[in-house]
Length: 265
Image (cartoon, rainbow, N blue to C red):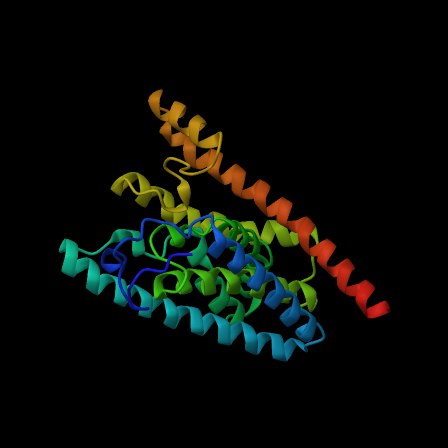
């Protein structure tokens, strides 16, 4: 792990000697190990929580994430303007991991169909998005383990997975195939906002423009772009999102079986 001389709240440009040493190294494995142990412990302790208690947890986590996002974005923007003279558009809440703020707030404070769809996204999209990022935490490319930049990402994606699994373990959300469909509806609606912005401003939020970082499919997207068929990239990415939602649907089923066995012992 990186042991340079820096302060916890130092910005990435100020951490001398760091060039992503903690990415994919000991820090990554330590984070995953701690997260796994803490996740299992919390879910086990909260598995019999009432719907009222789970709703309070949803509201609390959602409000915390909003405050955390505003604080981190303000912190980073101050440095970005200082060093580059402009706002970093990459901080806009337009990626998949940002949906947890919207879904959490709607699941906690809305009613009816909107609330139901939001709960379903938390039990599917939030879990798959959080796990994917935890396994490959890109924040370590810019920040060492013991830094605010890294802790922000570690906490954020841990809570993404935790809030989704909590809804499953407590049976707050019934895991059936309609849950996958309802969760994907929110993902699709959010995508309809992001896709035109990606093409207009040449961004790559939710990886719709270039499928950046996805093995094999990134090459397919590059080929489509070279053939002037870049408009097909979002459709390909939406298919991959839907496949991911279906895959993560199997995870809760396994988890519920594990907890049932423990209760019967």
